[in-house]
Length: 154
Image (cartoon, rainbow, N blue to C red; front, side, top):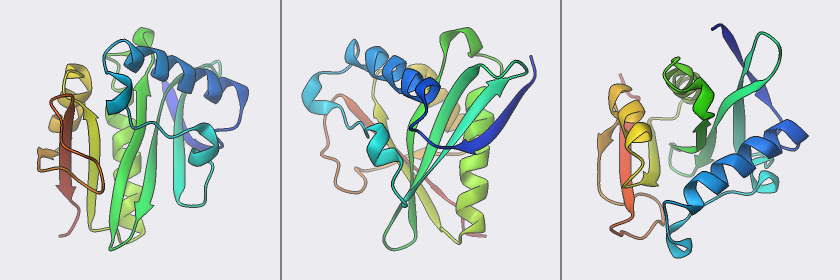
């Protein structure tokens, strides 16, 4: 299946539907106090760029965002691929676009927080060269959380 990835607003109805699907997926896997979700309104902020993958007919397949923090740190946020599109390389391609934008902007390190039981997501990050690390940014450590980082410096 072919797909394209573009920068989009998170405020569209179909992106809101992706966010809703992601939230519903994580609600079943993570206790409420360990969920660190951005709302679509937060995702629309100037510090965040959202990438959306679509198939040839324009249907959404997945998304992922780069959120910028102080000190040259970027954060991967709201990564999600619809179950019907998993295994097609959509997650990897979105992650590559996030990294390319971070590099272009001079961001030296990209970090992320994900569920410790989100095995498919962890495989995408590890295949993309991310390594497990200590808690990042202001996320508290927990048994429900896994942290990853990747240096983008040459």
